[in-house]
Every structure is written in structure tokens, then in C-alpha cells.
Length: 405
Ligand code: CTP
Image 1 (cartoon, rainbow, N blue to C red):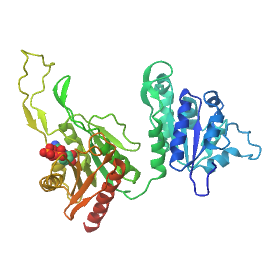
Image 2 (image 1 turned 60 degrees about the vertical axis):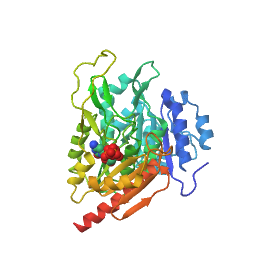
Image 3 (image 1 turned 180 degrees about the vertical axis):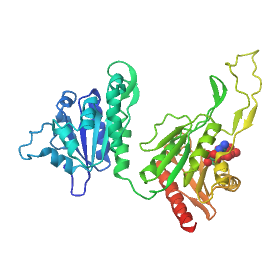
């Protein structure tokens, strides 16, 4: 399965770590998107996964030793040149240290020093090694040199502890590389603010009012905006999701915190997309101690309305473009049009959250785009595709507004 003339190549560098078996999955995910994957392993990596496995998956020779290929006397240079992107996954503390210091003493480290392709590093190691000052300094040096770090998550480690240092999920690693390889400049020069996720409104120290928003739509918008070349600030309520690479994440809990963070980020923004499911009401009094059960009844919880963030941004938008969402279960278009008018934004994306293929927690959405020009029905699509559609429309409008002002 050697690459065709126009097939792009990812050089996958596998180092000696127990997570090396996950590289097979990353490789597959990249291949599925039409990329040629060439594998380069350290000697230590071959102790964890046999080169035969990678050879079978790629139908190509696996590069290991500096002098292994008699037909190619400068193997590290040809590997470095043929790569459109280089991904080190898993990356041990050792390869990270070599990269940071320009050490070139085997095929992988010499190739990494020689390449001018974009480099992605997904570390995986014991938490102590990860937190060591040397590793942190090395990672910071790589980051400053433009290497994209795919931060390790927290989870069960081979050393038997649950801690930081676990290789990021293969699909997130593959997606980060693909997003960079498929980047466009449609939104370059624009700063996009996205609100996402639910908010948590505290009742007492252990309880809160929330909703079923997963944050998937907002995170998909943030990621897509980044892929389209925008600078992105993601103001997010509590979710299970990781912030996409290259996106500035501002984590908040309550509607009041989200309001403050959004207003602050809006100063430098050109486009705001309000995808958060902000609580409309918040408890007036937050108990300082956990509320106790009393006589089988609960006193009423008094609620006060929260600030409408979308309306607040719209009221100060000037030449910026503000887009809101309308999550509806009935009278979708009428309700969405009423929201467009009452909130004063440029457009509303209406979605029918009563459908199984749309709304909370799903990967697809059925939506309509409403603005002053009319209503456009969009087909059921992946949240990512919908994100693209929304950003394309908002971006076109933002550029038009710029040329007018
Ligand atoms: N929104 C907001 N701040 C709030 C409430 C809503 O920014 N305090 C935004 C949401 O992010 C979304 C839009 O307003 O972009 C519509 O949210 P939705 O929950 O559908 O509507 P509500 O305004 O809350 O009205 P209702 O609950 O009556 O449908």
C-alpha cells in the first residue's frame, strides 16, 4: 500500500512505551482518511510491538536502524523529506528530551532533527516522569518551536496508578493531525468566540441545577473554526470533552461566570457563536452547608433569572457577527424567529431537540439557519459539518461587514 503520487504521507514515529500498541489504531484511522502512513520505530519500541504488525498494516518496510536500508544511504533525510507531517506517538520522555536538545543518535532522532514538516508529539509516560521539571521544560521548548503537543490524559497507567501520563485517545490524536493537514485559511485573521456546554447553578455545596447539554456542538464549532484558520476562544461550562488543540479554553461553572468570560473575550472577537445551554434560572441563595432532609418535604428553592449572554453580546456587537442557537421541541421556526428578534443577533441556528438524530448528546443535528434574509433548511448532518456550515456563513458575513465599515 505504498503511497500514490498525490497521496499525502504521515510519518508515524513509535517509541518504546507500553502504549505503542495504540499506534496501530492511530495508523488505521489515518489510513482510513486516505493518508499513507510510514512507520519509524526505535529499537526499544520493537520490544513492545513487533515491526511485522506495522509492516502488515502498511504493506511497507518499517524503518528502525540508521544503517538498515542498504539501498538508501541517507535514510533519515529521505524519511524526513517524504513526510507531510510527523507524528511521534507514543512519545517517551527520552525522545522528547532528544528532540528538545537536538540530539541525533539514531534513525528516529536524526529524522526528527532533519524534517521541516509539521511535528506532533503525543507523550505517554509515568506521571512522575511527566511532571519532572526536565520533561516539562523540554515540552515547553518543543511547544515554543512550533511542535503541536497532544497532551496526555489522566487514566490507568501501566505502573498501576491512576494519574496523568496516559496517551491521549487514538481518535483524538489522529484527528489533531488530520485537522492540521486539512487546515484552510477561510477564517484566518478572524477571532471566533464560542460558548459551549451546560452551566451548573449551585444549590448547596454538593448539588446544582444543570441540563443535558454534552457540549459536543460547541466543541465541534471551536475545532472547526481552528481548522478554518481562526483564532478561537472557547468559553465552556462543565463537560467531559477535551478542548481541541490550538484553542484557548476558558472553563466556567455558572451562567454568571460564563457571562463574565464571554463579555471579556468578546472585546477581541469578530464572530461569537453562542452554543451553550445556559441555565435560565439560578438559585437566589446558595446554602453554605449541605441541605438536610426535613420532614419529608423540601422548602421551595427561589430562583432568579440569569443574564442572557447572547442578548448581552448582541447589544454591543457593532460590526461583529453574533449567532445563537434555538433548541426547540415544538413550533421550531416560529420560536426561532422570535428568538432572532428578541435577542438581536445576526442569525439563529434552530435545532429540533425532540428528534433522535438531533440535539443533546447526539453526533448529528437537523438544523435551520434563520437570518434577516430568510430561513434555510439544512439536511441532517454531523455536528462537525454543521459547524462548518455555520462558520462559513458567519465568516462570509463578517468579511462583508469589514468591507462595509
Ligand atoms: N442563551 C444565552 N444566555 C442565556 C440563555 C440562552 O446566551 N442565559 C443563548 C443560548 O446559548 C442560545 C440561545 O440563547 O444561543 C437560545 O437558547 P435557548 O435555551 O434555546 O433559549 P432561551 O433563550 O433560554 O429561551 P427558552 O428557554 O424560553 O426557549
